[in-house]
Image (tube, rainbow, N blue to C red; front, side):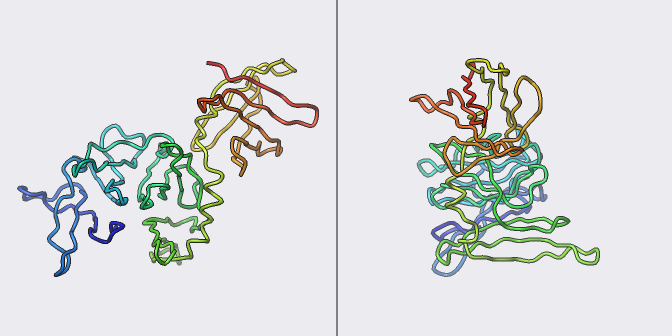
Length: 289
């Protein structure tokens, strides 16, 4: 992956590290652009590389590096981490957390130059495309699928945006006559509908919790939880229903019946309660500590 200013290219390599003779796990290496061409490869930073595979690195304009790693402490098979570039030095990588990373393998991150969004290959079960997560007040939103189709028997990887030509590039495998065929594809960036997705971006874990219905109206409590990247709810432990985001902030929709769930927040932006609009009347519930 090339840095936003074109001065540096990052790549994976399992070549021997400096001072060693044997090849090891994949690490993040780099080459600098010089007047005479690309310079000699070098280890980007010992702070980034670990004794496990560290791969698919991309860089923001700030110098922060986002990458996949199988290092100890991860949530799934592979997680996405960020190493921040502070005063010319790379810091200890930080896991992006459960809002982005799943129990599966999450990798191939493309970070926007301004770090406003992250596109990546997700390990969420039944994911049909790349995922995108937006930064909201310093936190990553729950991932949403990009409108890019994949072969059910194949895979998609290496997403990249060229901001100058406004083009989205990616690699995809498909299966033909029992053979896996791998190619690079591109499409107009407008086809990703990034602004429409941004309008729906939210941090789903904000809504998780137990809500006490006031006044009780045949229902005493509503429980909401996040599972495998999706939000679910149940009243008094009965039927489980899925909640999906809408274009209205803090408004979710019950997938099974289309009813709207409106959440309201305190002055400190904490979710405090909810209201469900139903034909027979509204249901109001207060979130419990």
